[in-house]
Length: 376
Image 1 (spheres, rainbow, N blue to C red):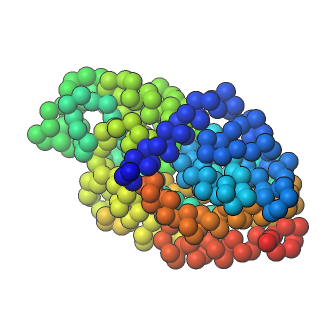
Image 2 (tube, rainbow, N blue to C red):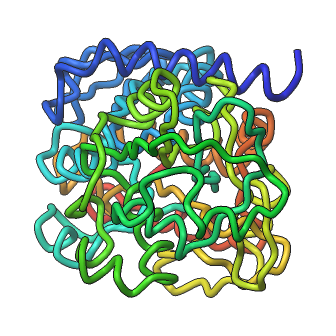
C-alpha cells in the first residue's frame, strides 16, 4: 500500500464520520463517535477503568482528524481509548471551554480572549502541517495551473468570474482555459483552514481585508457557496463543474482533485507536495507559547498556504474538570504523537514538526500538572 493510499483510506474514514456527525454541530462530544476509536464519556466525565486504562475525548480541526484518529487506533491496544470529533477548529475550542472534551484540535492558535474565556492557562502543541490546496474542477486542465495570492483573492471577491479571465490567462500562457463560469466554494463553519486561507489572501490583496474583514475562523464571504468542513467543500468541488475551493491536501488526494501551483513569498510557483509542506516550517519564528504560523513561510522551497495544527489542553487539566486518569491519558496521547506518532504523520502525507520544535514541545508536556502536582 502506498503512502497516498494509506492517507486516502484514513481520510475516507473522516469523511464518513463527518457525514454521521453533521447533525451534532458543536454539541458535547458525549453524543459523538470517532471513526478510529470510541468513547462513552465527555471530557469532564471521562473515566479510566482498572488496569491503567483511560478514555479521552477531543474535538475540533478536520485537518488533523486523520492523524488523531490513527494515533487513537494505534494506542487502543495500550489501554487508551480516544474519541475525536472533527467538528472544526471553532467548535473544538468552544467544547474545550465548555468542559465537554479533554483536548481541542485547532489550526490557528488560541486567541487571548479565548484563553480568558476558558478554565485556566492552556498549552498549545503544534502537531503537524498540512497544505491548503486551491483545488478546481475544470475539464481538460491538469494540476499545476499557476495562481498567485492577488488572483485567488480576486476570484473569492467575485471580481474574476470566468476561467478565461485575462488575470488568470496572464499567469498561464499557452494553457487553453475554458470560458466557463467559476463557482466559488468556501467553508460555512468556523474553521482554522479558513483563517489560514484568508490570512494568505489578505497578505497579497488589500482589497480582500477591506471586503471580508480581518482573517479569522469565519469571514464575511463576498461571494460563493458555503459547505461544512473540509469534506463538505471537497464534495461540493467534486460535484460542480467549474468549481474552485480551498481544500486540505488529504481531502484533495481522496477525491483525486486537480490543484494549483501557488506563488510563494520568493516568487516561485509551488505545488502542495509533502516536501513543500514540510519546508514551510523551516525558518519561521517560534514564540515562547509555541503559537507558530506557517502561512507565507520565508523558505524559498515552501508551499505558501500551509496550515499548522495544534492540540490544545489546559496546563492543569484537573483544575479544569478533567479526571486524573483522563489527564494522564491525554499526556500519553501527546507523548505518542511527539514520538512514534511522527511516522504516522509521514505515512498520511502530513509534514511533522522539526526536531527543535519537538524538543520544546516535550519540555512543555513535562510541565503539565493535575491539581498542581506533576502529571504522571
